[in-house]
Image 1 (cartoon, protein in one colour):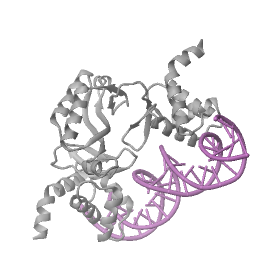
Image 2 (cartoon, rainbow over the protein chains, first blue to last red; image 1 turned 30 degrees about the vertical axis):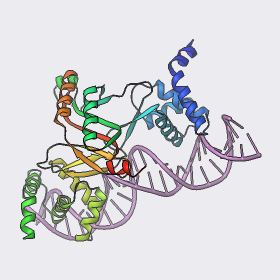
Image 3 (cartoon, helix red, strand yellow; image 1 turned 120 degrees about the vertical axis):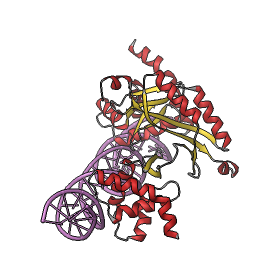
Image 4 (spheres, chains in turn red, orange, cyan, yellow; image 1 turned 135 degrees about the horizontal axis):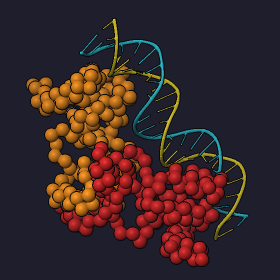
Length: 154
Length: 154
DNA sequence: GTGCATGCAAAGGCTTTGCATACCA
DNA sequence: TGGTATGCAAAGCCTTTGCATGCAC
């Protein structure tokens, strides 16, 4: 039962991953599966460090490098998205079958609120066309205070 | 003559800087002035490394740490803005009396194209209001290919 | 078996910090 | 004169790389 649920939740992702690996003549190893699963099971946004710690619980010999290398692959094949905290560190979030979205980041409590605004996306296209620029991706982060932090003073 | 032009260009910035330093009981040193001038004289976007190299030409004993420390101060008082290349490195651009703007970044040649779109800014406000979020700043970067790189194949 | 993957440790790149000396106010 | 600022070097932090061994295919 537990396995069924897991299967259901992660089936698409696992397939994408193994297909990607095969295509690139890479191998599906226990570590890569564990990292992918840990990643998918985590809520929202994880750092490489956090992923490493969680994966290490299940496989004590897990190495840092493996996590980083696997994150690269997962990003490559569209399963993960790099989030930029603007301080030189990265976090990652699942990005499969998810609509693109951007983030509001509370500078007080660190809350990461997702949002999507198609009008903004359209305007981004317009503005880049005007400059002869061809967008392949974008990042937009709004920094400020979330509702809770505004109320609680600060 | 050359000095006059310099004065004219940088007067406001120098005043802002010395006022800020005084307010914080910090000192206006030759190095800080040199770094500020070098920064203002540079075109567009510089890295700490580049600033350091340029300043070093005029003062061979200039240290890296001084550049970083001064950049912090200049950012603090609104003279400089940190730009995030999304790879854990920073560049800085003058940010005094400049209208806010965002960037398109060519992933091939590294070109950094500035743009401003008031409609997007307005929509950002709208979207955050809808979430009860209070924006204090934002970053938006569009990644892709500039006109030149599109033409030159790649 | 062959070649990629792993784990460990060491190296990298950028930024910050510590400390004795130098210098502004 | 007193307290920052500087310059140098060393440490930090996150991430990547090198290399011998292990493992998937």
